Each structure stands twice: as structure tokens, then as C-alpha cells.
Length: 251
Image (cartoon, rainbow, N blue to C red):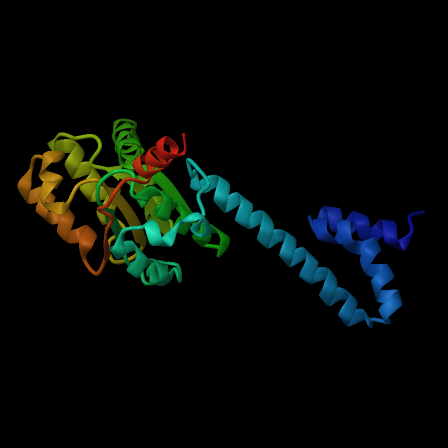
């Protein structure tokens, strides 16, 4: 016949209360030493279980977000960032833009930290229990085309619009035809005014017609994406160029 402790382990396994299994022995000793009552004992066990589940959920969100690299806010060298970024970052770090469903557009020349900032904000969002997707615009457009061809576009759209935050990196690196521009516009519009999207682009808004030839569509896209958005000018000297110069100086 099983002991009461063994039965607790079995029940915990059946209910997937893994922290109960891991912490029970320690909690029993602690409860005896500190003379806890039953309610205090149960409270501490459930606190451990909630903590474990929160951590598992955080790890799952980080993995499903599909970040290409792990870049964090504390790694940013604030004084080397463009002035606009230095001003905007403290407010963006609160993640209120996600709660308010507002977009962020980081625009400027390559190497100034746009992707780093976007990724770091996405990681912090995962840590605070928001759902996040990181994708590049070329990859997203390919997924949209494939879903349309496979007649699964609506399923892709439903998943896309449910994320608390979507990061669309590298807007402007690859041009697209009129159909591609329309597909991208319609897809991004699903989130407009409801969910937050971060766009990183190396092109100023008046140059978006270089990658999407339809001027009317470009105007509509700029209007939709920038409405009530945080527009952060990231123009400045490339971090990578600075690092190369430092390496040369240290030789």
C-alpha cells in the first residue's frame, strides 16, 4: 500500500503539478521547522507551482517568437544611439505602446541599432507575458504568398492578428511587385489600431515607392502604419563601422 507522500506524488504527476513533485520534500521540512499551518503550507506549494509555470510560459514565448539573435536592452550603449532613440527608448521600455496597440517605426541607415532595439523590446515583452512574433518582411511576404496559393491565407491572418506584438524587420531590403505590395498592406492592416507592430526600415518614408511602385498603395501603407505611431529616426553612424574603426585604432 502506498504512503500518503507517494499518493501526493502520484496525484501531482496526474495533475501535472511538477513543482509539487520537485518541492514537496523541501516544503515539508520547512513547514515542520517553521511550524506552518496547513493553509501556509498549501500557499507556498502553489506559489512554487505558479512560479514554475510562469517561467515555462516565458521560455515557450521566447522560443515561439523566433528571434534570430538574443539582444537585450541592457546591452545597448545609450550614448552611442541616435538622438531620437535616446529620447524614445525610456518610454518604449515601459511597453505601454503594446498595451495601447500603437506601432513603432524605426527608420534610418543600416547598422544604427534598429534590429537590436526591436529585438530587445520583443524579448522584454515575452518576459512580461506578451505574445510576440519576429519576422523579416521578405520572409513574411513569402509566407503570405504560399498561404494564398495553398488557400490557407485566412488561417495565417488569424494567427498574425492575435499576437500582442509583431516585429517586421528589414522593410525595404527587397522590392516587391504590385500584388506583393497589396498582400503585405492587407496583412499589416489587420493589426492597425488594435495590436502593436514594430517596423524597422533603412528607407525614409518618401523612399518607400522604391520598393513598392504603386504610389497610392505606398501612401496608404505609410498612413496606416504611422497613425499614432512612435516614429524614431535612427540615422547616424553605423555601430559596425565604429567597431571596425576601433579595431584599426587598437592595432
